[in-house]
View 1 (cartoon, one colour):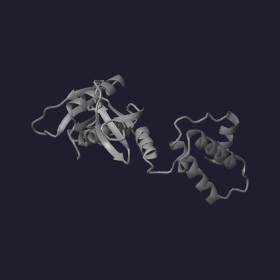
View 2 (spheres, one colour):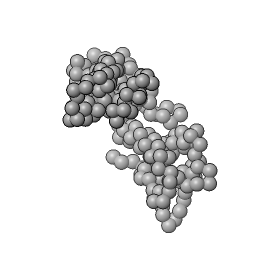
View 3 (cartoon, helix red, strand yellow):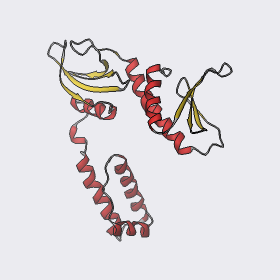
View 4 (cartoon, helix red, strand yellow):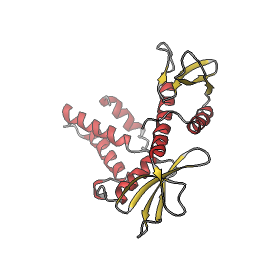
Length: 223
C-alpha cells in the first residue's frame, strides 16, 4: 500500500534536511491541498512535496542536484515506513514492539520504529515452538544489509553465489589492471570490461584511491 507521509516520517525528514542546511515550510493551501510542504535554501525554493511523496519543482529552477538529493532521501525513508506500516505486529515474547516484514522457514526479518522515528531492522531465528526469537542480527537503519542477511540466513540464496566486499575489491583491481595493461583489448571487450567496473563500483562502498600515474593512464585511454 502506498501510504501518505505520516507525521513521524515528516518529523524525521525535517530533522535530516535541516541538518543539511535546508528549511521546511509546511503548507496548507486550499487551492492545492495535495501539497504538504516546501523545501527552501535561504530565500530560494528548491521543490515542493505532495502528501503521497511526489515532488514538484519549477522547470527553470537550477537546483537539480539539491532536488535529486532531497527526492532520494524522502523516497528511501518512505520505502522503509511503508514496509513498516504494512507489516503485522510480531507476536513473540519480548519483541512485541517489532513488526514482521518477512519470514521463511525458521528465520524472519522484522522492523520497529524507534523514539527518534527511524525504522530499524533485525533478523532473527524463531525458537523451536515459534513463540520467541533468538540469535538476532541488528542492522539499525540499514535495510539493504538486513534484507541480504535474511535472504542468506533463510537459505533463499546459496552464500557461495555471493561475493564479500574483499572479493569484489580483488575483482575490481584485476579489471582496472587489465584495462590499463592489456594492449590487445579490443573496443568491444573494453566496453564490456568498463560495464563490469561500473557495476563493481556501485557495490563497493569504499574504493581505493588511484595512484597519480594510474589516473594519467586512465585519462590517456579515455576512461
